[in-house]
Length: 196
Image (cartoon, rainbow, N blue to C red):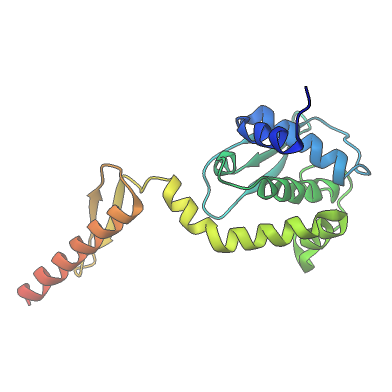
């Protein structure tokens, strides 16, 4: 029985994006784009929180000498293209190679100065993926983030008097919360106008 590459690709996409998948993705990125970077300590990778403005972070635990890479949990969603994870892992690998979050010698004083991370990602063969990554983040990230997260349970709104008012939400979408806040602000402004 023969299997087409297309059916293999669609089957691979059906795999759940969990921490095991992420570990395999790290191995793929390391072998494919960073074969010259020695792995001199244990490297642990996992999904973390749903950050709005951060896709990944790397740190070295001084006590255990283990490098910890954490990726935004939203990257585990199947709608997010694989190249977003690939570039994010590559970004953290560049930090590792430069001695940030790893026991390797530190090559630069600052981890991002002069676009060194972006330049190295592209120099290592991820130029197209990096361009696609920038476009997808620019065109999709904000809306995707807001559709995948809940609004905060408590919102604080300033009153005209300067005292904040606490508003408790019961979940729902950001759009619903924003509409509720808009109605509350309008009602507060009307009440303040009547008091004057």
